[in-house]
Image 1 (cartoon, chains in turn red, cyan):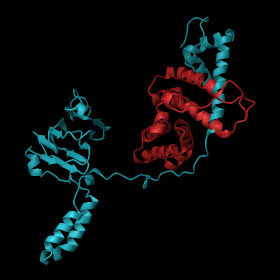
Image 2 (tube, rainbow over the protein chains, first blue to last red; image 1 turned 90 degrees about the vertical axis):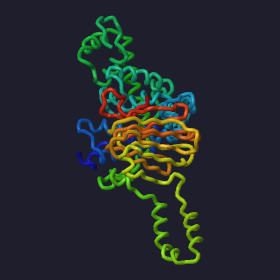
Image 3 (cartoon, helix red, strand yellow; image 1 turned 180 degrees about the vertical axis):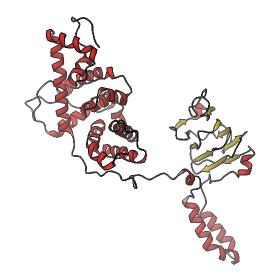
Image 4 (cartoon, each protein chain N blue to C red; image 1 turned 60 degrees about the vertical axis):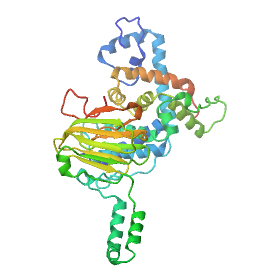
Length: 166
Length: 260
């Protein structure tokens, strides 16, 4: 078994970031990330791709935890019609603070399906298309299509085609 | 998608793979030759790359501060550790421990005291066990293939657990007209234990092969079934009766858990 502390130092930040973006809940993400490492301690997987294993276990733990909360379940299940709709981004010359931006980003992600959100966020963490495909149980060749469509959906809502103020 | 003709646009999935440096070898030549002459595809490629970077920037802005966390240690993994299977079967509930302590203290006085009846009543009222008190069918009855148990359920939900999925047989679940849960082991070929738990029933059939017939009263509105280490599932009265295969060694079966 790989040294747990070394593994934690190497992957925890990335896993927690992924789960926070996936669920929109930093506390839940912290619990789920910790659960993934606990599972690793209890029952270490084959050492071929531990990072992908940690992300898969963490994602499952987050989904399981979120299902106990109806509000979070709505977000994870991508029930777009029942999730509170975010206001569109204000015009570039209007003021809006970081909190607004955070809320808009999470609301836009929440309106994606759980699969599309997972694909986008695992890609953001640098996973190969093959690894992402295994995580969401689809083919490697379809990941590009999912990414392109998800970016299309987010583009208008988050104004990805414009230069955002920093 | 890879196309053979240079006039056909490059598909979105290929453009994403170009951005991610994940091109498949066969599509490499066509994509690059087409992009040299097609403004539409070049702009689409630029759009995907721009949106990728913009989303990445937005996500970084939206990320909260990471909490300080420590890795779990092998000795204390951060969660309550399940009891080993050998201990789980004999775990003593807290109410029974408390009752035993009081009985020991009061025992001597009770036996010689004129208030014996009153003390016994007090003990009985104070430490009344759950309606479905733990009970184990004696091994001699079980080995004869006649194990059975009957108890009044607590509440409207029942947890039904089969500890050893590797054992063969069938789990039959139906509805009865009474108020009690009735569980029987039929044609068991080995040791069987039917343990009545506060919220349900556990069938321990490690060495057995047989049929386990469970009937529940109409007041039960939900039955949670857990077979071995498999994922649990739920049954409602509208789904009854059900027959669930427990055989994991029969390739023709449904794997020992999925209801049929």
